[in-house]
Image 1 (cartoon, rainbow over the protein chains, first blue to last red):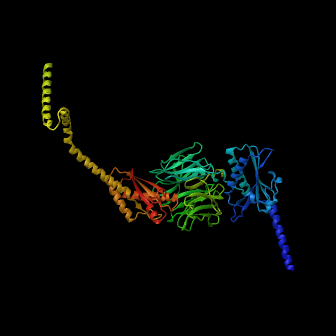
Image 2: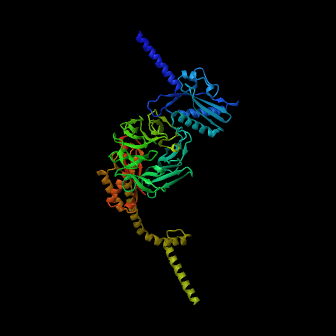
Image 3: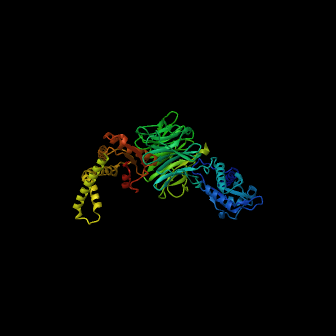
Amino acid sequence: MKRILTLCATFVIAVCAATSALASGPLTVDIHGPGQRMVNIILLPPKSLGGNELPQPQARAFEELVANNLSYIPFLKIIPMPELLGGDPSRGVGAGDIDFRPMQLARIDLCMTTGWNGRSVEARVFETFGGRRVVGKAYNDVGEITLAQAADRFCSAFLEALTGKKGFFDSPLAFVKQEGEGKEIFTVLPQGRELKRITKLGGFNLSPSWSADGSKIIFTHIAKTRHELGVYDSKTQKITLYSQGLGQTVISPMFGPGDRPVAALNLNGTTDIHELDESYRPKRKLAQSPYIEVSPSFDRTGSKMAFTSGRAGNPHIYLMDMKSGEVRRVTMTGTYNTHPCMSPDGRYIAYTARTGSGHRIFLHDLSTGREKQLTFGPGNDEYPAFDPDGYFLAFASSRTGEFKLYLTTRHGDTPRMLSTGPGQAFAPAWDTALQW
Amino acid sequence: MNSKWYLAAMILLVLALGAGAGCSKKTSTSTPPGTQVEVTDESRWAQPSTSGQPSVDEATLASEAERRAKAEAVQELTSVTIRFAFDSYELNTEARSILALKANIMRRFTDVRVVIEGHCDERGTEEYNLALGERRARAAYEHLVILGVDPSRMSIVSFGEERPLDPGHNETAWAKNRRAEFVVR
């Protein structure tokens, strides 16, 4: 009997300690840890401020934009309003105007309020346990066009407050889109807005990659008789094609350390990785062997370069220390590992591994040497690309029968399809300018 | 002096008329009256050209034959592709004998210029396949150079996996798609 009593007492104390800890500590999401829990969020109905009438269409549009943005965050779950018992628990937009108890009961961790005062909008997110404000922003003079931007900015600020990392809502993706027989380059925001055509050159336009400040996109243009190096400048809205001195083949062009262009060229019988000068002429070889070298990828500081090489008989991922020039092999298993993408902090390499059931995205942790499969098909999962903060990964997959772009995280969260309009989509590349 | 020239001209004219009348008489039997002069004039004009025709025909026939032979050679050059194994740019025995045939054609028709296209199947990844396609085209190119074809008449381009011959997703289709193709410019 005594033993049962002590057991019960310990249990009660433990529960009390746990709840008090939960109630006092601010809610944080460790985005570095795998197996994280889901965070539930509810978007409370918009309120009118300053005695003005609520602009219904704008308020609804803003809410939809935010809900769409947040739906791309794999650890956030949006709880629909009707699931909350007792209806709207808020009278205003401040912490004092909200009754957090029904939300605590419904296991909702966060709530968002929006208030409209004419053309100005205030948006806040609170923790339902402590009532602490996670983020609060106000945007003035919100029109039709700026509404979406305001929603993106707010979501970026919210995600940064939650995770300490900037969100990707403002960072566009460049990608390759099938157009009839050929392929052209487009850009789109990851949440599926602002689809924009970059090239209309005909032939095949492949492997887009951004400059450090996001003002240029470099790509391969395949005409009928040769490859050319294409550079799109967003300032002048013009495309320049370079071929002088580059040979017949231009593969995997990109902007490397110091924003200097890097590409795989074949100038004397073997495909090697070359650094180019400012006029896009070959300057020096970065990686070479008698075999194929393609797909360079650098960390943010430019101290390491991951690339694909066929020097072991099959394509594998290699890592070069840019200072010493020392090269080491990264992938030891499988027979076809290609298309590496290094995370901006230089810790991870995501790559495409050919398995018995198609290509899959794998993640290699350079600090531990551990590998993890991130995607599981069906079909082929190819072209991994890190987002600016190195947490999200875009890739292309043929799981629905045709190639489309998808979003996952470096923990391998359930992929979410990105909307890129009709036609197959390949080779996503993230503009990482906002993180520099 | 003037009258002399005048007389000579008159004689020439009369002679010409006489000759014309003589000719018209020969043909007058088969032609209805009324259009005699015009008809004879035309036959007169036509005669030299008809007499020269057989020799022209021979030349055109020869050039026609040459043209046809070249068209056939070009057809032979472009229609037969070279196949490769997966993730390989090695030329097998069959590929070498096809290239020997192509080299013969290239050596005979010296004005033919070709683009050698390298292609891959869909199973690889895009960037590595672009390099592999280039290696395949280059392997064919280098073999033709060894067989005596002027390198300046050939150029190479890799399409990677972008232009499959067979859009299927099976080994038969992939085997067809791993190829080097010849396009005459």
